[in-house]
Each structure stands twice: as structure tokens, then as C-alpha cells.
Amino acid sequence: MNISSATRVLALLGDPVAHSLSPEIQNAACVETGVDGVYVAVRCAKDDLEGFMRGLARAGGGGNVTLPHKEKAAAVVDLPSEAVRRTGACNTFWGDENGRVVGENTDVEGFRRALRIFVGGAPAGMRVLLLGAGGAARATLMALLEEDVDEVVLLNRTTERARAVARRIGGQKARVANMSIEVKGQSFDLVVNATRLGMRPGDPSPFELGLLSRVGGAIDLVYGKDPTPLLRSAAEFGVRAVDGGEMLVQQAAVAFERWWGMPAPLEAMREELRRRKGG
Ligand code: NAP
Image 1 (cartoon, helix red, strand yellow):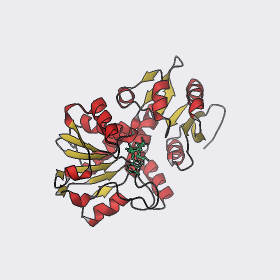
Image 2 (cartoon, helix red, strand yellow):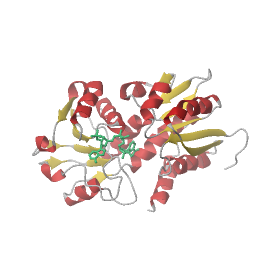
Image 3 (tube, helix red, strand yellow):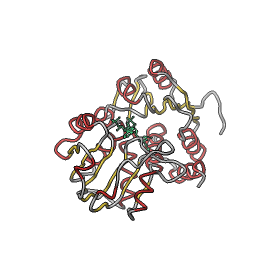
Image 4 (cartoon, protein in one colour):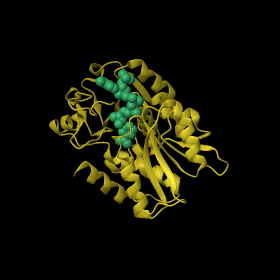
């Protein structure tokens, strides 16, 4: 990587950022394609977010926003995409020719692409159990509805949050379950974990898959070096499952495409993720 005064600076803004693999994945993509950019992680307080975003965008750069600032970022950008407006969360930004900050939520398209790879085609008509009601769950729900699934049942620790997500994004196809017991004995084509459970060592599985009569497959948005609790539970019940690694790469690829106007080098990005995960 040859850094000069012409190099575009892209930054991940959040708190914390030390655990993120985005710098490694994006810099690997820059090296692979030969674009003149560098990607760094900046730990940033909420009050500093807007200044960083505007400064980077006006300087010809951009970046990503991660926890806990995605909602604030959605409120800061001048030109929010449809995905930012519907989810109320922004994870990618850059500047336009007039110095305005453009915002995108690449988790929506990232999940959609990872889902299609997992399913081996379009998931139209599926019945999905979606665990969680935070930013990732909102992006997942939007992608599922765009893919024309039949029904999404939302289940979250705080039921009122799930209701708010269903109202905001779900339309006629989202239903809220108050407790796990309400879906006991039911059949789902797909279970998606969009909670934080699995991020910390010792976390329990976000859902007891044995409660269901049938599960077609499971996607955990959480990823790590070891199989997540949901993946371990899926193995126990013979359910095909993947972690959030592919979604991480796909959402990064969509961001790369927006910044650089060219296809992202997916294989190089996957390879970097595998290397960092030690596999
Ligand atoms: P968030 O907005 O903070 O939401 C967290 C969600 O987890 C909420 O539904 C929360 O329930 C639930 N939760 C937290 N602790 C829990 C516990 N002890 N028991 C049960 N539920 C619990 O976070 P987010 O942005 O949606 O992210 C969620 C996960 O998705 C994170 O692990 C993140 O790393 C992952 N993610 C992955 C990708 C990817 O590319 N693979 C992209 C985005 C996010 P309450 O509402 O009850 O608090």
C-alpha cells in the first residue's frame, strides 16, 4: 500500500472499534484492486461523530459507523438512502460533489446477499423466526421483506422493542411473539439471530431450537473464531447453519462498491476474514 497526499481516507467510527475486522477486510480490498485508499478505525464519542463524518466526506473520503452510533449517523447525513430512512440506522457514508454527506445502510443488502448464498437462491415464501429488535434486526427484517418472504415472527427480550420494529418496517407480514413458548411446536424455514447473544464467552444460545417442530436452517449474525452458541445448538439438532462472517464480508463489499464505484474483490475479502479468524 502506497500512501500519499492523494490517498482517500476511510474511517470506521464507533466505540469500541478495537475488535472490528473492517480495517483488515477493507485494506485487503484496496490492495487487491489497487485503489488509492486507506481504512482506519477511530474510537469516537457521540458528540464528535458529526464532525468526523462531515470532515472525512468533504475531504473526499468516507467510512463506516458502528455501535453505538448508527442511529445518530442516520440523523446526521444529508442524503439518507431508502435503507437508512426505513431502518433509522446508517453504517456507511461518503461525500457527494456538493459537499453533502450521503448515508447508506449496507447491512440490509449485506444480509440479503448472504441469505441468498445460504439459501442457494431467492428465499421467497419462507417463514422466518427473527431474534432481536436492534439495528441489525431492523436491517434483516427489511431485507427479508424485500425478498418477499411469507411471514416474519419477531422475538425479542424486550417485546415492546419488537412491536416498534414490526410497526416501523414490518407491514402485514411481521408478527410479534411475546415469549419463546408461543412458537413452541411451530415450523420455520429459517431462524436468524440478530441479538448480541454469542458475542461474549459463556453466552447461552439465543433460542432453544428443540422447541420447534422443524427448522430449515439458521443464520447467526454474530461471528467469531469458534462456533457461536446458536451454531452449536444447530449442530445438535442437525440444522444447517452459518455465522455472520459472510454477511460481514457482503456488507463491507457493498460499502466498497459505493466508495469506489467498482465491484468489490469478494474472494480477497473472504480470505482476509478467514486469516483473521485463524481458519
Ligand atoms: P443492538 O441494536 O444493541 O441490539 C441488541 C439486540 O440484542 C437487542 O434485540 C437486545 O434485546 C438483544 N440482547 C442484548 N443482550 C441480550 C441478552 N442478554 N439476552 C437476550 N437478548 C439480548 O445491536 P445490533 O446492532 O442490532 O447488533 C446485534 C448483533 O448483530 C451484534 O452481535 C452485532 O455484532 C451483529 N451484527 C453483525 C453484522 C454482520 O455483518 N455479521 C452486522 C450488524 C450486526 P433488548 O431489545 O431486549 O435489549
